[in-house]
Amino acid sequence: MLLVLNAGSSSLKFSLYDDAPAGADPAVRHRGQIEGLLGQARFVVRDGAGAEAARRDWPEGVALGHDGAMAFLLDWIRTDVGGAGLKACGHRVVHGGREFTRPVLVDEAVLERLQALVPLAPLHQPHNLSPIRAIRRALPGLPQVACFDTAFHRTQPWEAETFALPAKLTAQGILRYGFHGLSYEYIAEALRGLDPVLGRGRVVVAHLGNGASMCALDDGRSVATTMGFTPIDGLPMGTRSGAIDPGVILYLLRQRGMSAEQVERLLMHESGLLGVSGVSSDMRTLREKAASEPGAARALQLFAYRIVREVGSLAAALGGLDALVFTAGIGENDRALRAEVCRALGWLGIELDDMANARAGGTSPPTQISRSGRCAAWVIPTNEELMIVRHTSEALADTPRA
Ligand code: ADP
Image (cartoon, rainbow, N blue to C red; front, side, top):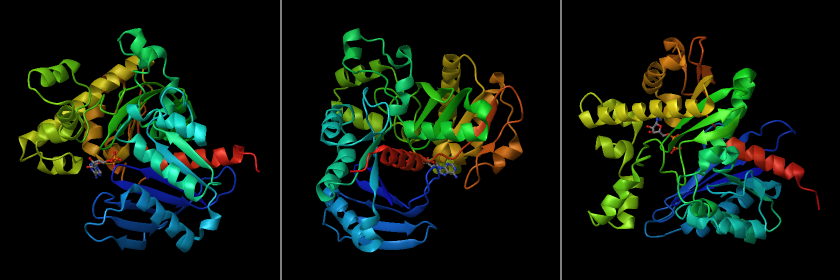
């Protein structure tokens, strides 16, 4: 059995996977989360078929915290699931810096190096590392594998990851790391299985969720991506601004007297679809309100416009485009957005197949939504968690038995 953990600022998401024969993907046994870690905590678990398997609510005023949540989860696994069968744990870790170009088996030295990367992702990295430490204390012999959002992009050529800043700062690690790497890696593998020729081609993947970014794949490897030093860069997102003129930040600090914390809140939590619309950060709500709320319609228009422009930029980095892939919550489900983007990219050779586009998404399998033309368009559901499971199984297979 493998445990997968994705620890955020206020929630701990987890899955348990059954063992599988070598080469096969394991099946989900349980999936759940403990949310409200800082306030009123709630634990809910579902089985592989989606039926509720366990639940617990903590009373108001009891802050469970990250350590408390991990202790509870390990106890639940031990007593209710049979912890003896646990073979390893895979973690989603936001930042692997420059040095981690692939997942890594965690020991004390690795943990120290990951801790040194906290300043690069101060809001996320500490939460990703705290369950690794908790498991090292509780189950010291359990192999743990850190899987990074940044690692997949370390194949970018230097010009794609370098800001035009003094070289000294680049040498100190101020560069475009890129994120959503586990999603892009999954899509690259899936596309190779669906269409081996496209899998080796020039592909732009649009990962459009609450967080949104795009990646240029050449022969399945990242050569450019829209997120940069932080996941604020690139496309506008649910509540994040995406790329803006850095001069705006200087203006806000100097002329408007805003503090760094206020600017951070503005760029991270008050901008993007929410800021532009004044209505919501959620695509479904914006679609519902687009006819009655001009702000909602403007947010949708700006989002599509920025996606189209970034596809142009990434296609230029690739020297042409063979396929565009949509994925994540919005990419998989919002047909209208896919149609708008594909139509605007007709000049790249994409010919939308309306019927296929209407069919694609939800629970349907990967679907080609273009007619055969110069450039294909696909909808492929992503699965970052499965990528962590694969990496964790591989690391286990590579680990010499004691
Ligand atoms: P994240 O993992 O980054 O939190 P998701 O990949 O779950 O985000 O995507 C969430 C986004 O997907 C939200 O904006 C949500 O409105 C959108 N979404 C989900 N289902 C639909 C749908 N049927 N139509 C349009 N948008 C959808």
